[in-house]
Image 1 (cartoon, one colour):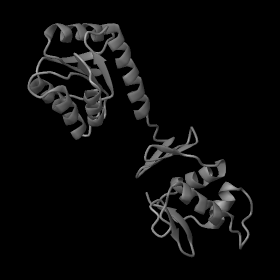
Image 2 (cartoon, helix red, strand yellow):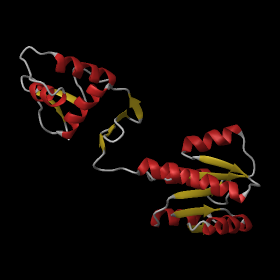
Image 3 (cartoon, helix red, strand yellow):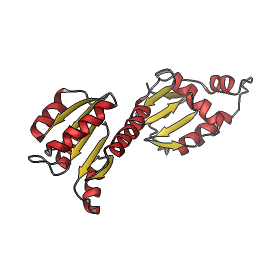
Image 4 (cartoon, one colour):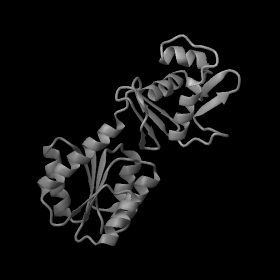
Amino acid sequence: MNILVVDDEKEIADLVELYLKNENYEVYKFYDSASALECINTTPLDLAILDVMIAGKNGFEICQSIRDKNLHFPVIMLTAKIADKDKITGLMLGADDYMTKPFNPLELVARVKSQLRRYTKYNEKNPENDIDIGGLEISKEKHQCFLYGEEIELTPLEFDILLYLVNHRGNVVSSEELFEKVWKEKYLESNNTVMVHIRRIREKLKEDTRHPKFIKTVWGVGYKIEG
């Protein structure tokens, strides 16, 4: 994995590099912000360790530049002292962790590993088991549903209905088909079971009933989720 280290205190940067290389990480080390920003633009990175008080653009500005480029890898800030307002500033700009100088290099390595584990887990998407449609995420394997990152509590039947619609996204699915595939029973006319469950799912997804974003009604035909 590629780790960016930026600190204008040469001894600290060299020490951090040594410990990270001992863990078999690829280290891109810089003593100035300009070189670091060039690296960010040209190198795929998995984590950045930034000194807050570096000359030129400071660590906060580098962190903001990373997030402005829509890069989501973890950022750990190094600082000689930490005030609450500085920590809040860093977190608002997208920093993931802080360490105050002087620090134990072994603790820094431990935090690097922790952040990388979290980042790797978050980005492990199995295309066969995970679906993301405009902020609606469904994990087939874990039977979980998330709306803009917040878990939505669905009953097993509600989950199966939503999953069936998602698996057939782009197509209109009739109430009869939904009922027979999910409940595995013969559909009877005047059966409102599907409609009631669709309404409950929409409520949990905070859908606008007149202009639903996810589950759309095709009148006289059935329901549809766009691809």
